[in-house]
Length: 472
Ligand code: MSP
Image (cartoon, rainbow, N blue to C red; front, side, top):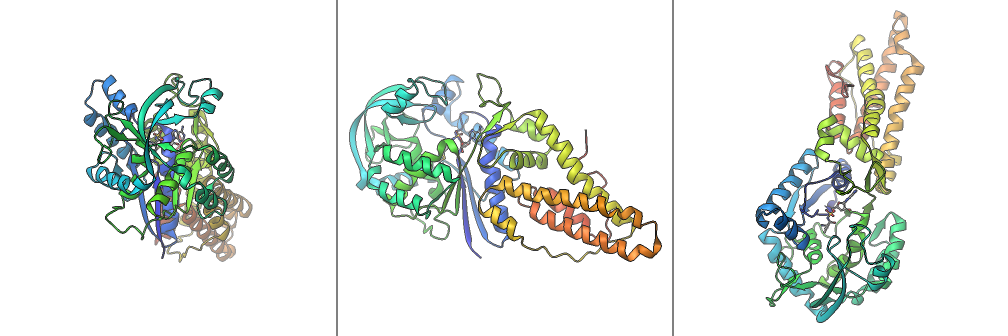
């Protein structure tokens, strides 16, 4: 049995969750369930990123005191994760006292690689990062992700000497001891690494109040990413606990927009702390809404709770794990969502369960002796982290089973008493195959898999009284 540690990006709490936020959680959940299915012990972190001016300004705008504001939004994320059926084990808030204390300890350990200097340049508050002159020029002074002009900053800050670690990071990426997925993103990171200057890791308190104070210097507050990235180890109790059971992480799940922080700054911090690098960093694409980036100004932000309430959790997980490609940007529209539900979940799977259970019921079948088998092709795709492809693979099996029923026409055999044994053998074989499909489906749709398994392993097979995916 191996010990597996899985992490997810911690969202900013400057608003409620949107559908894009589901990606990290459900992808990590698939991996967690897959690992547990293989008998491994899983620790699975989630959390919320609660410091920084972006959040402080939002609370001020709404005239809410900042503590209540972050409490309220963090609760919305916690509620959301639970509703998604995510099997996390640890939840960290960057405003937790333990986290703050530990981040300050981490800072002290980084001190050999920190120096003070003045900074003059550009900053994007939406990204919470400094912008190079080159980027500033390429984007004509306006952040393409946030559609806001970059701010000019001139201040005295602490710097972290990323340059001390570039060679080690480069070789870890190249020899895949820290593997970045998908592979084309690893190449992007290697290119960025050359251009990465030392990182300004603090702000004067006059500019940023809502953050973790720099130990030993009351005039400075930590850069929010130093505080946020540390969550992956503070939640394990670093530095006072020995975290070697679960660190290095088996897999860290992040969106493509924040890969650079996880693949450059975070490894540099870990190396400075003398800790090993994560084994994999996997970066997913973005969910688009009606073909466009979601944005409040376009008015196309989709509320995930509405999507969940519309058709229930299995439908949500189905769409976001299969039709949202694991690595590429993909689209959500209500029309596509309804179609996937009716044509695939209800017709392909729901009907299959109903149809086969009815046929088994007529022959009084039950008490099947089923032992799941590991499927090497499935494991290979799952191990590549391309979960939407693994889901396609399982769905092909659903369709193969439908085809096999159509071809074998068991309802016709039922008309001939002398073919009874043949019919029973066919039905038992089909039911066993469906149980195996349910086994492969478990990481994706755990509730549906459990229902299918209950139906076909019962002493007497009976179709579910309500179909798994009723049409409406
Ligand atoms: N607070 C930082 C992460 C710190 S991790 C130490 C942050 N927060 S965020 O709220 O902007 O994003 C949280 C996660 O949601 C990121 O992985 C991000 O890529 C992901 N997504 C944000 N919008 C998304 C979509 N439209 N689609 C898919 N994922 C999206 O970045």
